Image (cartoon, rainbow, N blue to C red; front, side, top):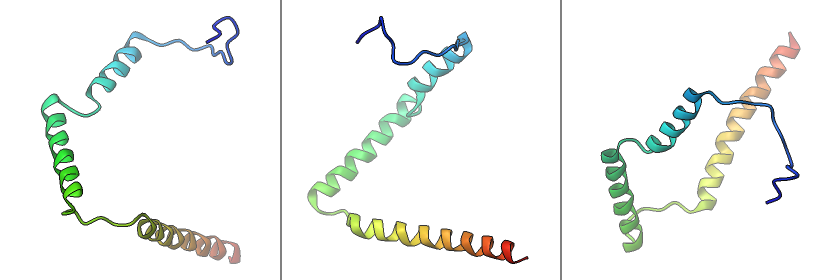
Length: 88
């Protein structure tokens, strides 16, 4: 990396509180060590079920279609509201 010619510079300073908050956030992102370990066990069990073929999986195309339908429902509702506002 070329430290002599930075791509971007910014005039911003961080307080000690902001730095400590950032460190704490990173360390505790997944919760306490106990909850982190519990979550890891759940994930391992899910992976085992998938690998054994016991888990019900939904194909990506089906998930994508459902999301697109939901998005269309939401945006159509917004378009109707905008049309009603313009008509008034």
